[in-house]
Length: 188
Image (cartoon, rainbow, N blue to C red; front, side, top):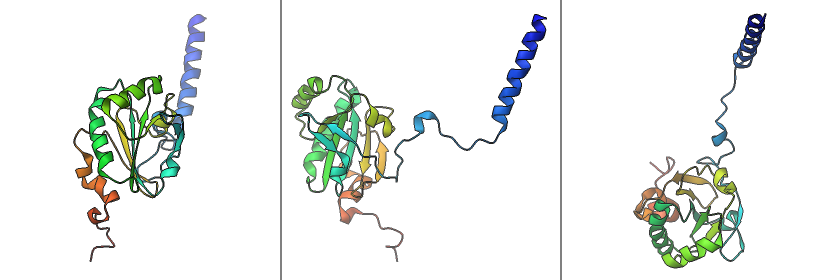
């Protein structure tokens, strides 16, 4: 009798599973990829506090090229890239370019302020202690850097290296009109 009950339960379970899997399911991205900012799509706006407690919104920088970097003080590669980011920040005018370094350190200012002073960083450091903004952008590893163009569109997502990325045509095309790649309509 027990075997019959187990067999019956197994058959019911198999029928239920086949019924669930039998229908055509549209392409559903894994949970980690849902509601994540995509390349070529508008950047999600956010507001995060800086080292002085002032809220900084991405939308306030519309019209500028923004390098959005997710990092943490405990991340070795993040520490390595900070001098490169500082060099980049000093290279371009604030009129055209901004860096937002978004720290995910849960200790906030207590740990990032000494880090900023040690590395002599002058670009804005924001805090995303609960990592909500980082997850919205799909920054699953650190460091992760996004390039947002003047219209607020995400153009690049990649780890930043210790080589100055200002030398990259992919980066400069959004800052320097003379470095812009010709669009197909520009070609004769």
